Length: 390
Image 1 (cartoon, rainbow, N blue to C red):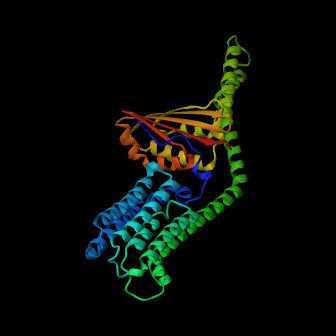
Image 2 (image 1 turned 180 degrees about the vertical axis):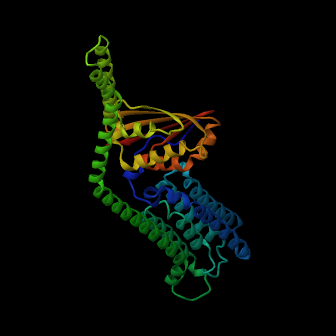
């Protein structure tokens, strides 16, 4: 069984949304999304029932509520972590549902709606637009709110001759669209401020990282030097010490010298050929047996976002409290400007349970890659995604 859509370009390369810049923050916002969908449907239902005497076309009232329900379902389903990122198409569906609900709500009370102030379309639409805040960019939220407000304004203008209060038509329009515009503004401001805050934090973090790069290079150089000294102490020094102590070269010393040289060369070559990925997964203390197949050393071309996402995923796989994994195999294949990655995770229980446990980490991988696909068999979870070479 396969989850996920066909490959597409990375979400990071298209728009900057709160969900894209901070995937875990979007996960934390899911209860708010559920509350927004439920509140919109509850508010529309209660308002419709309380104004039952004004309903002249019952079928339109029912379909209006179904439109609100459809918008709420689209909002909640599209915000599901396993479907990340929340797409522009889903936001468009929410907007369409709000517009249809606004029109049908007016149709349901046509000829018997004396006041505009008790119409629910503006408030309900605003609540659904507010639910888009953690997932879509500011400009798109403004466009969605403006489009629905335009439809609502037209509806109010058409209804205005039936209102009992004698005021300019523009006043009716302002009363109707104000809740929607206010909630749209709140949603758009949240999206803009959140993205700006996270990006400023990331900029400072990158600056600190650059400042510490020189010190890190010195530390790594010392570490490599120490590793090589350890190899010499383990292989070369004992051999030469024995030769010096013997005072002569025996018949088997040439073979021993060749063995020591080959061991030293193999150690140095292995260290030179190792990527950050192989070092991470073959470090001492790893609980899960891992095989890395990376003949082209493309793992070193991974960007910081992908490395961080993979690092978190590997840490979760190696934690028995998260998932009961038996082994993991990674295959990296370079293709022109992109690299294809396949991760096969063998689990002791079931792949479905493993996928559920790893859901937050899979969401982050989906967001940074944009094309994560998940295959499940009874005890094997296979992830496939790609990334741009840097």
